[in-house]
Length: 226
Image: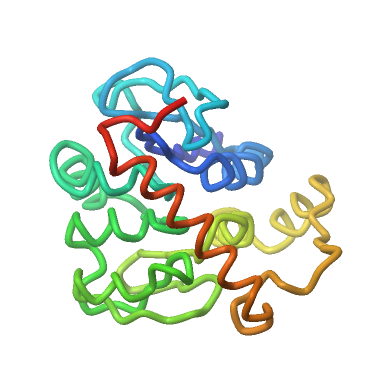
């Protein structure tokens, strides 16, 4: 008997952060029996926050009913906290096995009413926004609320860790370990400043400046400048 394909939908929006989407995509797309589709409110190319990468998406109505949703973050989050995006997310969550987010994508989950009363995480500079949506912020890299079928990941690169956890939940530990090895995911960064708990104060301040500039570029107009 053939095992049904697992449909993963990664919904996109203008000014998403590329690795938030592409990191989980790589892990999940390399998993046997998993199909990954990019979707958006309108079909066609969707541009990332650096205005340098385009991913082609089908419309929400053309996307398969998802077993898993992975919502990326990015400065464009501020423009999709109401309207079609959270409405679609709320609808599909009723039948997903897992609804997940990376970085500020958890704020979109919040806008859809999916994390109220739950522990959740997001990019460390935006943890203080989670209580707006009734969530309990936690600085963990990946937070799984099994009863609610919700997983949230912290900033950007943590989406890869979350995706491997998803692979394990969907297909088993051995498959997840094989995908990790196949992609040679064995992080050995040259610096130990990847956490706000370890980064020197001047580096933390500089990173905050970069984040503020990215957000300002989006909030100045409907589309960030190229």
